[in-house]
Length: 117
Image (cartoon, rainbow, N blue to C red; front, side, top):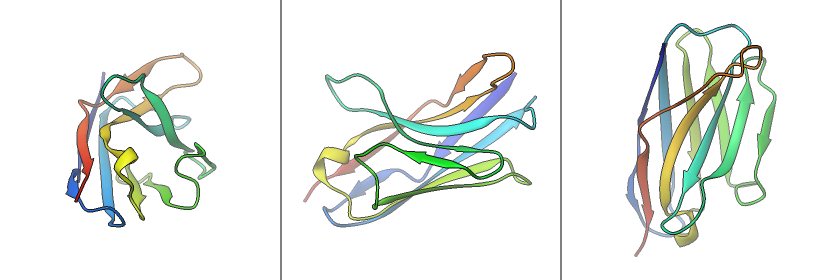
């Protein structure tokens, strides 16, 4: 079983920054892919960014140039640095870990990010 715990959310003014973190524990393979998703009220959950264990990254258009995803394999942690935040970034952000070989996917409990003046 895999547990994912997010931290770092909160309220920030437009143009501000936040850094989200996700700590993973449990039975994790060396091939896992970690990522961030978000869900705004009344909208479907959408991908924000993901990163492989070797450091390859991919970003949704909404975050390109503003968000940076990173991970520390030794600590089994992942981070999302979010800069130049906009009100439309307001959402619950979820940490995700996927095991490509088994197809298993795990989710954190979600953390609120609110961008408002």
